[in-house]
Image (cartoon, rainbow, N blue to C red; front, side):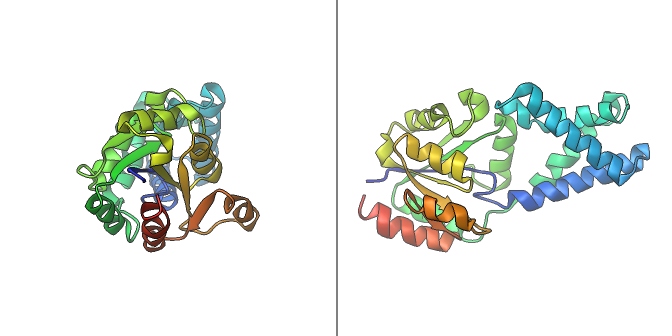
Length: 239
């Protein structure tokens, strides 16, 4: 019997891509107004900064740190980094935190899990502090029994260690957990590799090339109403 559902956060519980695009654009407006660069110059510098941080740091939580992206953007634009970096960072995440909301049906699905005494975990590739802030912005402070980030685990998905840390915190066996995520290779393959059941949540649809392979190991659902139906009919009841 399933005792816990562990969710990825970004792109699984809320629309990350839309907010990420808007945050990037709002930071661009700030930079253009304050230092007079063009849109193309900003986009080139920010994109270069992101790639450089990931190249230097590799697959670690700090490689997602927007403060580092903003600082290197300033450096690539040949501006003293302390002039605008912190304001860029706060503008970026302020955009997220002010507008975040659960996907439609998400609140109802979480309530249904609570009604069945099924625990809720969050497993995410990110630094811990900002994920806490996101969960509070989503109103999930009373819903989450376990949070593990790649900063805490020291590895990113799909490495087994991050999933195993969730299971250890929840004090359950892999077969007693179901993982829900939107990234097939990181979320689904990683969870299945440690023995969990997995559900691939695809609010924007799955690629046909991936779908046939994914159906061998997981359910694919487009929304939380379908997810709830699959979970309670195929997983909770049958175990």
